[in-house]
Image (tube, rainbow, N blue to C red; front, side, top):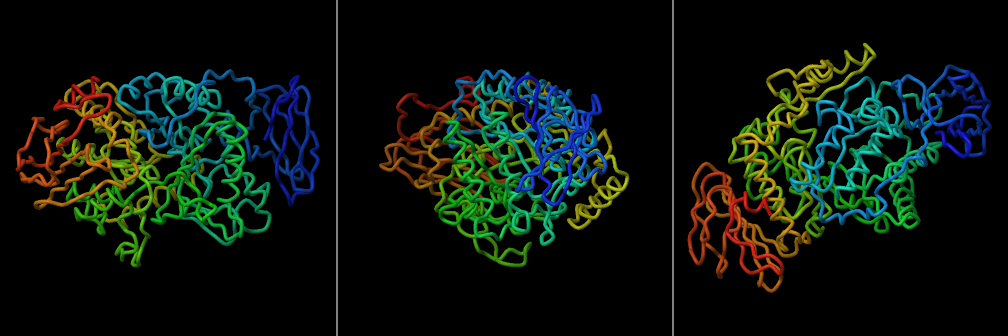
Length: 611
């Protein structure tokens, strides 16, 4: 990497432990500068008259020119020269930003390229006020590292320290984060530490970054426990701190941590935890780490001192699977181990649905119990980038179910005792597809991608071929249509989401994510009653869900004077009425007791969202 110091001087460092020689070549004047190797396998040099913006290559053992493996910017793409970035010179405006408590976050996942017509960080800034008005206070960016071409989900990134050039580069990301913080929004970033993309991967030309023992579904696995793995670990750990230090990122979501393999006595998770804790104490700022894992293992969020991975939270896929199959009868074809209402009740109260049971999809027992974990250690969602993106037509939930079930799904998510996450456009029921898209330049990779996607979809028996991910039109069709937000039923869905988020933030029982005082009971054929209380029962909340086409009757099991505070159909105050009739695909929320600051009453969602 290149670090600017005083008077337009710059230091360059690159790890290549098995190389004997390394040269630096500056493209502007053609200077070729020999680098000096230390005992840890790093080559160094200091160069004068090398201002920010200078472009360069490395030459291992006088071979061809290669970009910097730790490049902070690739202005001409993955095969072009790296550029010196001055991180000290940017003037931040978020000095008063102290971050937000994890348990208060309402996440919003977005893809920079598809979020706006322009597909840039600065265009996204112009829409932040809309997200604030909705109640969003945490944005999760899909990966922004430099990838091949001009469009990609980002999980094929080739330069882990870089920022995509056509998104706005390093300065664009800094301005975006700065603007978010000034509006009270935390920023999380997706990062990929299990593999790198197949095009533009120059790491092997420098060092043994990849393992010869392990392999991921997407390519070579990083070398976390073999010969020379100390340098690889440092490369990854320094990358985590890079985003926090230079870009003021509040947290990272690590992709597929179950595909990170390390059998060392001191694991990468131990090293990472110590580094983050040391940085936190030195900087006075926090950095939250969230994992994606399909292991259904509580160890992911168990402290490293107890043998766990030490993540602050992890995605809870079981919540989506259990809920989706209840909403869409076609869902059982693809989530055959789900489909019972008691499974969703378990997801609500315990977390993992599969906690040691036999799972037909895996042909083995799967998971362990998460019943003792607090709710703030799980992120739940009705949609994320993977769910529509891995359907042949890119269908969002709004394209699969009707309006009542959309309302029900939103309520099930936002009333849950977990950290909720919306996928961009979900808040107003966006009904354009979100496809998988890419822009490989290598003809071989383009062919392999199309053939691989086709075989994958045949295996899942979707009954149709996927859209061509390399077609630019597929990418353009995935861009949000923001004008819909204030029109017709889209506006109605947006108001519903606003009301739910407003209620979640206001009601003390909904802000309690301990899960110690929550109970979920089934009633009728397809009814779920979720009861929450504050310990002495002076404050209680009852959420009634009807997951069926039929009207259901519910007999109040809890005495007292209950008031309807939110309903997806027709809110009416109900006091001391023993039986309540619930319309199909509906949710009704009842409150017993008074809040300390605001008296919640029977209200429409318009009234709640206006508050």
